[in-house]
Length: 213
Image (tube, rainbow, N blue to C red; front, side, top):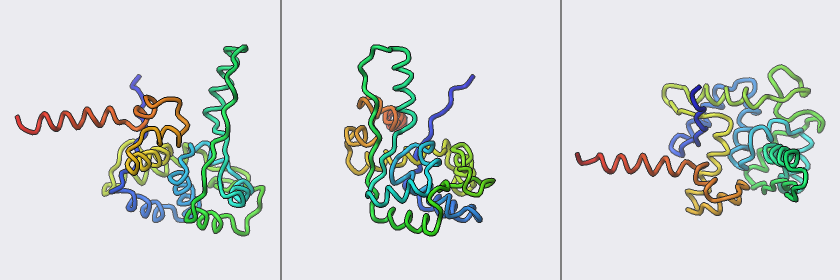
């Protein structure tokens, strides 16, 4: 069985065109798709933790000025660890907190305006607020945009939004520690692998070495 390739970030040179094409292709669900897209890029939360947000969750976060989400991947890993090691003193991971910047605040306020607090914010094509779009379904929407001939990006999924968030932080700061803290990674080595820096170094070395044969 071939190993699943990790998601890649959306390159900055393709970002605006990707975003505009997503809007163009979304028709009925344009507002849902573009808001979820921007929320993922702006906060770096995993898609599985965003699709299930309710309108009420977003309103509370807007009032607070930040999101505070217990990331499901981390809590699941902690519970598995506690099950395997009942005497472990490892503490339950804290919810990940992320500030809502003014530009995102404007988008989210418009998105939830006039809607019921109890309904899911990012509704499924099938439901009327009673079901939310699945992370795989949203990934399929992004893949469809990525596969457009004039965009032609590989390994784009819903997780690409978190990768784009991480890459932007690294490109702006040059600090792996900054990215590590932002994503909640346990070590710099995990962050290096996550950003794909080793692969980039190998590709760069090959191009340099092969440039004058």
